[in-house]
Each structure stands twice: as structure tokens, then as C-alpha cells.
Image 1: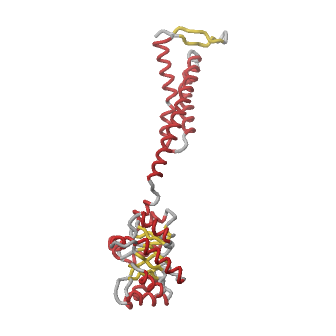
Image 2: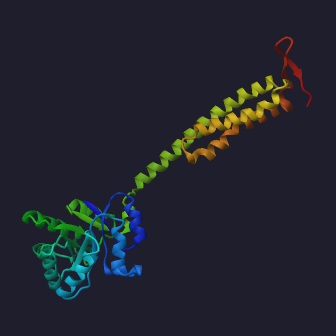
Image 3: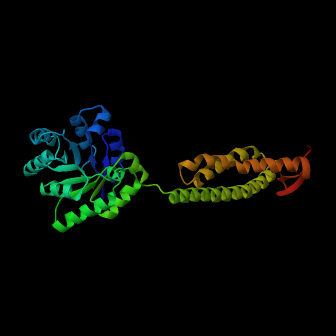
Length: 312
């Protein structure tokens, strides 16, 4: 089942067109009115965004007037489909436009016999309204199933566009009933990727990966800090000791950035890159004030480390 977007809002169409799942657009006078623009201007913008059928609805009236308006709209682009009302005049216009090679979409279908009339008039598409059927106390899924049976049994080429989609259940029903297309409001289209279990799974996966990442890096940082502390102590009284701390800082920052798996982790990585340095400071303070005053210095003549007493 193909997905169309049911809107005249250019921003919504532009965003939805980037998803790679929208095959066409349907509009109607009320949607056009919301945008405060002329129908022709809106259609010209839409055809630049979506390479697929674009339904443009003519004003309801006499067949001759609808055909006249339809001819103007059809000249805008080859993808323009003329949307006609399910009335006798609409059926007349449908037949005439079909004979002229102009694609049509007969809308406001609520029964099998209406769908039959549109199919016999050569409609390219028919649009049964699911939401309004449910509002009136009828079962919209059964209507779609019956129309699918109609077109299948009699071999009509007319495609079914399930319209008046209000929620995700309507999309599910249309798809399972065999509808060729569902034209869906932008808001409902965005909801199609959601499910409570998917959301819960993503949250669990994210926090588990973060816990593993932070724990592993913290443990490695502690051990690295101990190793570096030992190296600092052994080189404390050499002439090169003043280079050791900034050099190690740079190495740790590079190491942290290397571990960062993506840009979102760089801030965390930078933060944790200073953990070994903090461990060094902590161990040094404990050693200096509380536990021992034994440091080591390098005896260059003997090439060995000797204990030295450092006064607090």
C-alpha cells in the first residue's frame, strides 16, 4: 500500500518528501484555504517537491464548469490529478476528463454502489472516507474491504485511496483490507514510526550502553592514573619532571577522544580524560599528608631509585 500525504502545507510536504516513503499528495479546498493561497500556486509548489500524483480538487458545480477548471489545472503538470465530487455532475465530468486522458480522483465515496459508478466513469482513483464513516456509526474497514472486492471481481483498474485517515488504526485497517493507497495527515504520518515497546527498547539500549561505556572508561582511568602516579613519583626529582604532567594531560585527552564513538560522546570523553589526573592528585595528597612520606628520586651516578624524605 502506497502512502500519500493529505495536506496543502508546503513545509509539511517538504519535510515528508525527505523521508522517502511519500508517493503522492492530496489536497482539498479546506486545506488550501488554511494556507491562504490560490490553488494553482500551491499545486505549482507541490509538484516541485513530490514526483507523484497530486490531487487538485475543482469547485463543485456543473460538469461543464468542472471540466473547464480541470483543464487549467491539468496544464500545470503531468502529475496533477483532478479531484471530483461524487455527484451526477461529478460523474459526467469524470467520464469527459477520462476520455481526454486527464487523470481523476472521485472523492466522498461512502458505499460500494458509489464506487461502482466512479469505476464505470473511468476514474483513475476513488477515495472512500474512513473517518467520516466511523463518525456516522458505520465500519470503515468493511467499506474498504467491499470496494477492494468490487474492483478485484470486475477487474477495474481504478485504484483505491483510503481517505479521511484520523489515526494509526485507520492505516492498519486500510492496509489489511487491501487498499492501494492511504492518504494520511502529516501528524499521523509522523506517528507511524512510534510504538511504546520500540521507545522502551531504545531507552534501555541507550542507558545500558552508556553504563558500560562509563564503567569501562572509569576503571581503565583509575588504573591508568595509578600507573602515571608511579611514573611521576619516580621522575619527580629529575630535570624532566616539569614536562611530565602537561604531556600526560595531552595524551589522556587524545586517548579519550579516540574512545569517543561519535560526536555526542566527545563532551563525556573530555570530562573523563581528566579522571586519571584527578586520581594522581588524590593519591599524591593522601601519600603526602596521611600515609607515607616516601618518595623516590633518581640517583644518576648509581642509576638507581633511592627513597627520599619529603617534608610536608
